[in-house]
Structures are given as structure tokens and as C-alpha cells.
Image (spheres, rainbow, N blue to C red):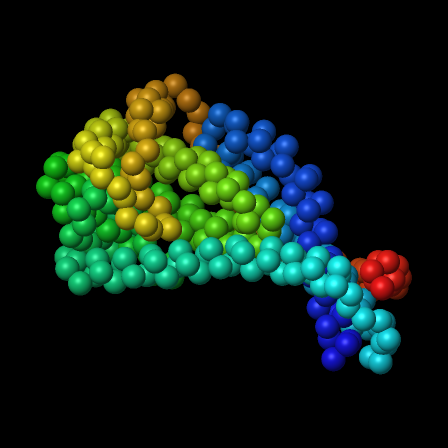
Length: 324
């Protein structure tokens, strides 16, 4: 039992330390990324930097600390978990669980809302849009992409009644742009990120900064689907904002055309987009994930071959002795 408790405590302590160091490193880079002018690279860099500390911590703990402890620590260890070490390990546990808890709560609230929408949803067809689309009864003029494995578009009935065919096509092309970007998955990763920032208000601020960039990039993707799409989407944004008035949007953790924020900046970008270059294409999600998995395997194998686990275990012994 002492072996297991000590191992868990050491792993959580290492996780907390790696998170703190990683967060201190990326904090100034996040501020610089938030000021990038173009939305596609801004959104991409914000996501990468947001996930980087937890990725470093998970790789460090999973690739070095846990293997070193499991392979080299005696099963009948005499070392104990002190009160100070238990408190610090508890902080690491909070970091590890705070983000996933936020993500789970968002998933549950979104699922309840979508189930309510589905009860009165009617299927519609929009030319040029290859995703299933449904009209729902929602007081707020919601237009959203929902579903992680089977994405579909939902449109409030008020939006369908006020927007003409070209405006509706532009709006749904905007949401289809979110699907191309894999934004539902990205938003979930950002919200469920297991790190120090998930325990602070900065998590929501960074998510809003990423969401703003993602919305602008989806606007531009929609504008490229037709010669008048930019004007149609700008017109639709004005109508949706007027329909919303002072109403509050539903609590949903997926993309939405409008959430009650200002749209003047987005409209200005749409009307001026002809003077700007095209957006960078986002890297394929599956390719990035595959490279990450192979990089982790290569890291663990290289660490074992170089004997790094012995040095890591020595460092763990020194840290544990400080708390005895």
C-alpha cells in the first residue's frame, strides 16, 4: 500500500511541478498569440499553447516519472507520504481533475439542451451544405453545429423566418466551416484541459479569445463559398443580433453563430475581406494526433535506451527525502 500511495503522490507532485513550469513558459506566448491579426493562425496558436503545459506534464509523468518509479523503486519501500507531500499531491490532483470536470459539465448541459431541441426539430435541406440541418424551437436565435461524432446543424425557427435563402445558406456555410475546423472537438479539449489555468478565470478568457478567432475564421471560410457570401453573412449577422436583443443565449459548449457579443468587428472583416489574403489551412487533426502518439512512444523508448529513468528516479528520491 505504501508503494502505491508513494507512487501516486510522486506522480501528482511531478505533474503539478511540470504544469506550473509549463504555464509560466507559455503565459507570455499566449498574450502574444492573442494579438495576432489573422484569425486562423491566432486560433491555432492559442489552442496549441493552451494545451502545451498539460501535454508536457502528461508526457513527463507518463514517459519518465511513472516508468522510473515502477521499474526502480523497491516494492517494500520504507518511505512514507508526509503531510506536506500529500497537500502538494492534492494540488496536482485538483489540476488533473478540474479541466475534465468542466468538460464533463459542459457535455451534460449541452446534451440536455440538444435532447430538448430534438423533440420538435424538423429537417431542412440547404443547397451546397452537406451536413444534416434541422429547425428547432428556441427563443434565442441560435444557429449552431452540434454533435461530436455525428455533427448536424440546428437553426432557430425565428432565424429561418427572418433570413432569406442566400443569408441562410451563408449562415449554415459558416457553421459548416466550424465542422471543417473540427471546432467541437477543439472546444472540448480547451475546456477540459487538465492544468492550472482550469482552476482560474483565465480558462474562460482564453476560451473566449479562441472562440472569437474561430468565429472570424469560420466567417471567412463561409465567405469563400460564393461571390456574395460575405455580404449575405454580414446581413444575417445583423438580423440575428437584432432578433436576440437583450436575450441570453442557451448554455451550450459548441459553436454558435451569435452568443450575444458584438458583431461590428466581424461584419467589418467580412466587408473588407476582398483586400486580405486567404486564411491558412489548419493542419489535419488526425495527422497531428498520430504524430503526437508516435512522438510519445519514441520519447519513452529513447529515455529507456539512454538510461534517463535512473537519473529521474534519483531525482525523485532526493525530492521525497526533503519531505520525510
